Amino acid sequence: MPGPQSSLHWTTLVGATELSDSLDDPNLVIVDCRFALADAAAGRTEFDALHIVNARYANLDEDLSGPIIPGETGRHPLPSVKTFEETLGRLGIDHSSQVVVYDGFGGAFASRLWWLLQWVGHGRVAVLDGGWQRWIGHEFATTAEQPTYSRTEFRASIRNEMQVSAEEVEQVLDNPDWRILDARDVERYRGEFEPIDPVSGHIPGALSAPFKENLDAEQCFLSPEILRARFESIVGQIDPEHTISYCGSGVTGAHNALAMKHAGLGMPRLYAGSWSEWITDTSRPIAVGNE
Image (spheres, rainbow, N blue to C red):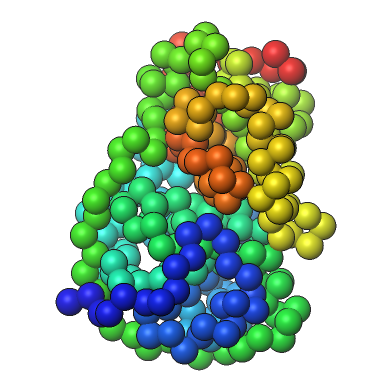
């Protein structure tokens, strides 16, 4: 059975000092999401060497994504609901948990777990602002010991309105009441450089909104006021429910969703398949440059 409700209630970001002061909360669950696209084992290796006290580890490929179906899915499809429920139970997360997620890349990977938990109906989850670097910079508690905790049961309450399919994206390509945001670097958006996927470019009509521009020089999120101004300058007065975020494989697109929610703008929808799924169907249109 779920334990008593925690007094903690963080739903977007949490600071390192605030988290450090709350480490003894019995409902706190910290998840390390460090990962490297070029070396899928690197994050686990880093975790085993040193991590935040009581943190447990979640791997992007193994725990936060479903199986890739060549020619049909992108590089990080969403896990099935049942599989993700089992993953959350294995991590000791239930509906009484205050979850905090972190990585070593400005929240790029942690925001995926943040989004997934929102998607399955668990809103009390926050990304550690500044991540691993901020934590060790403050010399807060770390360990190499593996955590001990009990398994739980998690029952999802799926929020289907949070995502869109490729077909739904196609339906709004020419609709002026919708905005599509591309979270990749601008060079990838323009099709000038594509280090990962076999086809370069972007979804026609999409607007460039690199997730890295949500962060300051120390990899902390910009203030809500600055983030609000940033996204309002991109999408104008379009309702967040008519805004779609995507990236290369549905991971950093969640970073823009987190930034918009933290700015008080509400949640855009996520095209989880993103560019790597879009290009599996050669009939789908592609744009390059700034068009």
